[in-house]
Image (cartoon, rainbow, N blue to C red; front, side, top):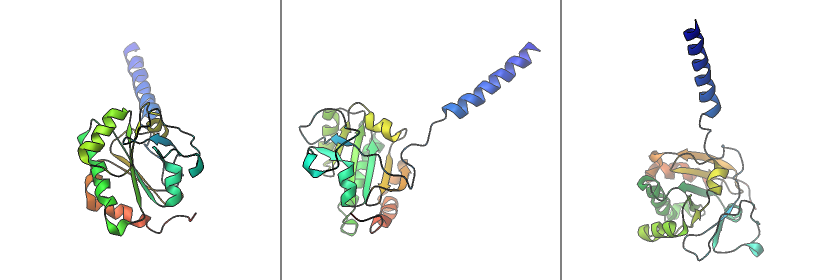
Amino acid sequence: MVGAFAAVLVAIFAIYSFTAHAPSSAGVAVGRQLHFFSAPLAASTLNGDANLNPPCTLAHHDRRALNVCLLVKRGPLVLDFFVTDSTACEREVSTLQSLAEEPSLRGVQFAAVAINASHAATARAVRKHGWTIPVAYDADGGVGALYGVTACPMLELSERGGRVADRLIGEHWLNENALEARVRPLIGAGVSG
């Protein structure tokens, strides 16, 4: 009897643990607003942690930082979260770089953030791959926590204004054609201003 009771308790605890501690869905849900932040660009001299409550005006913007609020004011944004010690995750940034050079996607902005990465490691990755899109680093993991980044690569595709149109997770999106098909609908979507 005691053994059966113990087995029931173990089963209840396992079910509770699975449902209470299951990984939450990463990123910002489709239809929601991106979380705004400003983070130091890897190719700059700016050092420090990301600002999770940045000013959204050019007058108060440090050009050495990636400011998501300012980017989405200009147009649609494809924002990639990656880690510097993952070949697949770094390849995703290279895929974004290729799409950024596609004339038919002019107007769509591409940017990436290295989660829990140092300035030096992120700058090395930028130089190694020749990335020219804005690549920032998130030294203390604040941006990663804000977005709930639990997988890599992870991309947030937002319309102009910052409303999330799509969230893409996994290595399938390393394929340039597959990603382009999801990015193309951003052109002309969203609010103006």
